[in-house]
Length: 289
Image (cartoon, rainbow, N blue to C red; front, side, top):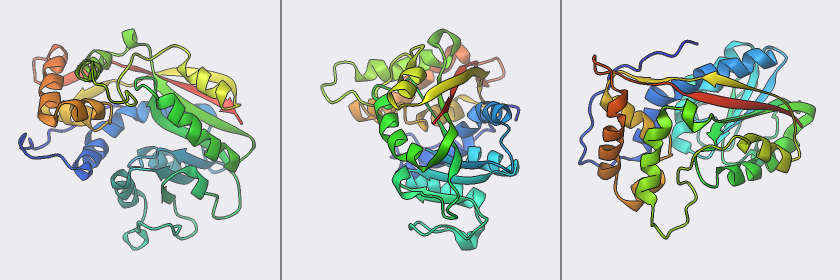
């Protein structure tokens, strides 16, 4: 899937509070597609298709599931964000199968669950043979610890010798967006609250460290170009804030201050026609359970 500039969105009232549902829709309509090249590269490498039974942890609003299902894979997604998950249901399931409860969708349809992986044992009794974690780690303090907890539950649902894919941000010098994400770190400097969720530069061995601590065996990795392209500055601000990487900064200051400073940090990446373009590289690590 070729990354494209996101279409222009109606500018929101900056004085109005932003609810989680709005952030989730911004993720689905603006930001999530930026990672499509990462999803496609992983699926190509692992030959995802009709023989794949995939569990996606942190499935968000379902784009990665949609791409895998189009290749013939059976897919199950789990996420703690109910707003994003509701949008995934709209994308992947017929309206009659929408629900926000624990009941699975009818057989043959994608399965979507809220919560943690401990509650998503395969409904057909056939164990999963692929686990994907497409929420990139490596730019938020504490994100690797959270991922270890998730992996402990999810890996137990896999057939022995299954593939596990972890993803992360590439080196800061290869990610133009890193300069914008530093806004989050600066706005939380000096805050005495726990720093979990605050931005930090990605490290070279973030993914390998998680794999070894989780008892997984790395057997391959890759880098994928995922440029972030936006039709205008407002779409760029909204898309970036939907990633959750600025949530700690919003708590430390306020939404209006964060939006203002993110917009200022984006100015070097604006092109003469008003679009915003930031080249980035993301990593993936393929492991065996």
